[in-house]
Image (cartoon, rainbow, N blue to C red; front, side, top):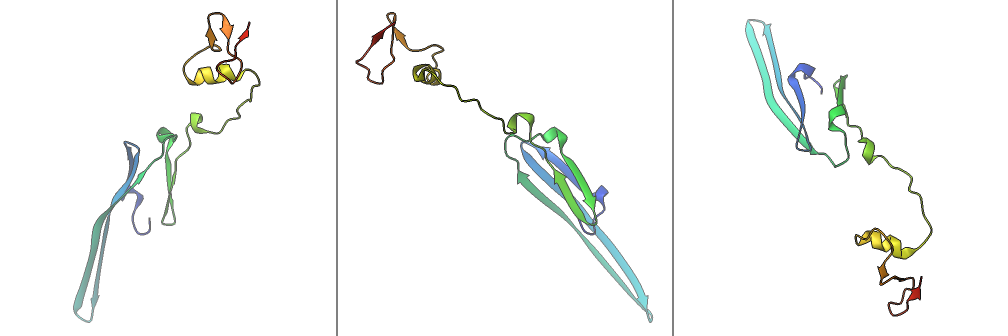
Length: 123
């Protein structure tokens, strides 16, 4: 951050919030033709950003170069894209998993294979 030493900048993460804060202090004095001139600039700042789910807040890195603060927040391993295998087979078992059943829907030894509830095929 331009004009602010890195030891006066604080970066922290609290409850999925990235908080960047600091304090700017500058003092300038001049003496010209018997007149003394003094200027002081100071102030604090605070910026907070909401972090989305799926980031690894333990591995956040920050870099200050030429007055530009860069913050790197990597994705968590579980949040990275992965390929999903498409299976073929009985849709009843697929929908059974959706409603909490671990095996194909069965009733009294008969398996429901038809999309019509009234039709049953014996196993």
